[in-house]
Image 1 (spheres, rainbow, N blue to C red):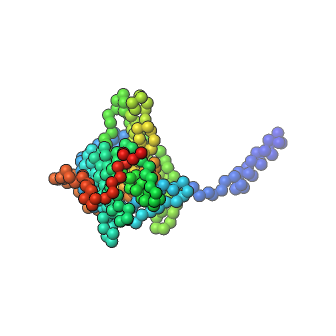
Image 2: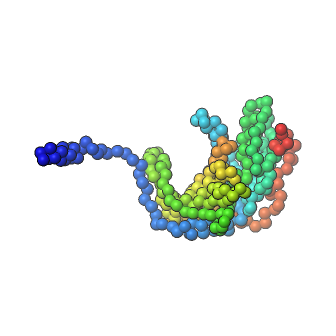
Image 3: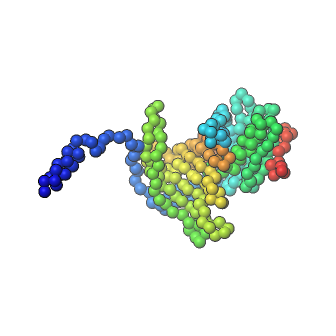
Length: 314
């Protein structure tokens, strides 16, 4: 029996000597706001359908991530813009800078897109293409090739779904939705101090059957449980083959008191396949402005720029 007493004595010394535990920095878990029912999250997306059109001045920041595998990105200077959207997928975006004038003018009707590039002046071009296609632009001048490719990748329709999200489809044999909770480690910077934190989210997951009968992810809506009102803060859009097409982060989809809003203050859109990110900050937006003329969504080649028809290229 003496050996059992020695074992217990040794364990007691081990547990009280401080050799087992030690203080360690871990991510700070942010407190949660009250739960929100799944049906309420679906209703919030349904409420966004009241926004049939948007007209706004915007500030734009474009980052080229095509060299991200080497840890290199190219951030363009911020620019001003005029944005008009109308459901289902009509969009017009004009981009200009105070000292340079017009930089680009682009539009899409949901099927075709047009991009007129005005700057740099020695690389002006008028681009046409189809929304459903992916293009590789080649040219003898490598700088021209990269700039034309960047603007071709920056298709205006990439903004349509993030800013005018579709409703959640009713549950059927070809569509379903579900809500679950997840946590994510994030870096939070406040007053010049950075720390790791853990946020908790509701994920509203939407899946649909493809033409072969296979279930595919379509949308994932992220609602932040650590912010007042549990606002929508992210939307992931998947292509028909199941690949992740668009990641959109939102800010200001709720008031400081947690009341949901119909339009965010800003959105940052990341397109992994094309390798770019675009941050859009709204300035005095109009929701459902009356009397939008049809030609507001038409870009014409008034400057007789060189035409690049992406569908006609070999």
